[in-house]
Length: 457
Image 1 (cartoon, one colour):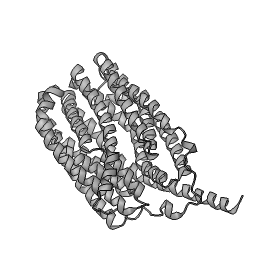
Image 2 (cartoon, one colour; image 1 turned 180 degrees about the vertical axis):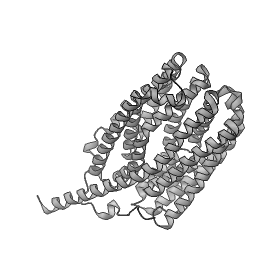
Image 3 (cartoon, helix red, strand yellow; image 1 turned 60 degrees about the horizontal axis):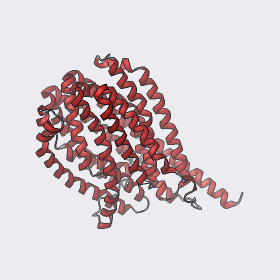
Image 4 (tube, helix red, strand yellow; image 1 turned 30 degrees about the vertical axis):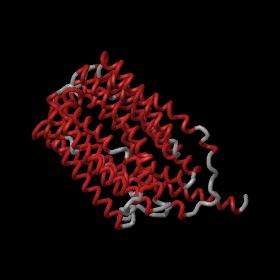
């Protein structure tokens, strides 16, 4: 073996080791923060179901889901775009990374204000004609601030994730999840559905303020790009990716929301409450894979941008194997323990158990779709990513329209399984020819990898 070959091999091993260490540290911090937040959400859901009862709980969830679906539109797909561009430019051009972050925040604020006003004005029509429950109009109007604070907080957290500042990322997610759960439950106890929505408004506003403080502190310690006035080129590039990202987010969130609307029209708000209660435990299965993905996606995007393809392949392969193992084992455990889980709310009806069991199975293709989608975007296969989300929305909504009228919440759970299975098949061609693309760099320097530590406070 020649000296250059030995040098290249040892450099690659060093790079892989450094990437894996950063991935492990980042995952640990993100796991801690997200775990606290997700635990608060799960406990809050159980408490709300007991406090409000099936009908009022279903109404609260439908209002919350409706507001957050529109918030997905008001966010313009900027959170995912922010993570991508900040992570790609952090090592190559730190100033430009700051321009992308600043542009995303500014656009998000303007969009959130406009959409919030429009949502408040249209809440009557939405409650009566779309949701079919005029009693929810006041709660919908009260939820309008979420269209500003929720996507803005998402974008700020995306900037922290793109900067790979995992300690602050964990803190931000823990505080946000804890505040949302605590104030949502407290408001619901004090004043029912309206109080719960008001509590959620306050929680998201506080979370936004806290994340701003964390970002500014990270900037002072050179752990995040500074706010820099963006030029037109940066704004155009950001929006060129954000618009497709928005389309996928709207398709995805819209499909989930419309599935619940179909269920509410055919089976009532109580059925929505049953499905959402089961879906909270389905989301628990997605928790660890999402935590890992939040850490690894910025790293994969950076590897792809700097042409570290061998490292990318190694990391992506490990990502697929680990997340699939978690999804399959967790799904099997939830499938077998569905009856015990539902007893937390006193649900023992066969349809409720079948709903949770189907969602446990659906977790496997859900996780696989998320992993493949992140890999495709990191490789700039954006069109395949878009196509797969179109397939998801089509499969889920089409199945829901056929199955929900006769099967209720079981039909919607089955629609999830069908939709996510279809989208996994649709995105596989994005990785064709992957191994033949882009030769390895002749030498990998420490500067290319980035020796910056995220452990500094």
